[in-house]
Image (cartoon, rainbow, N blue to C red; front, side, top):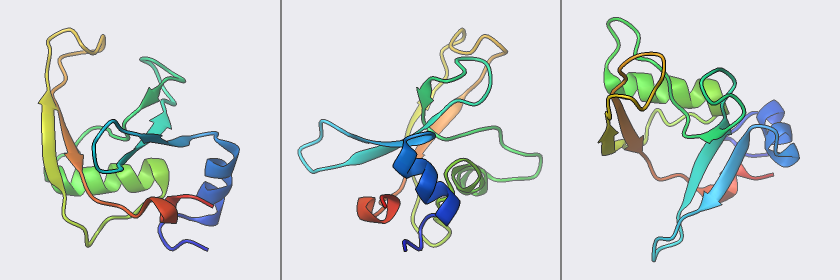
Length: 113
């Protein structure tokens, strides 16, 4: 049993209900962990895990919390690196949202059943 993801999440991954590992086009084999959006906007569409930073919470803590909440994956000891910041004015219909995308290396095998 994987230590990266709970039994309930493993069952969900096996059924394909929430997470997907999508191969990238990189020269080195890389996968991207996606979740189906549970809420509007774009409910049901594939997205990177994420959410809002809480008052008093730093960016890395928020990224770790959101990843754990949405996927069951914990990365408390792993290095996070900012990949890109998205901030087009009309990209979210709710309000102006600026989203930094962070990445961390994960063992893809530990995410699969």
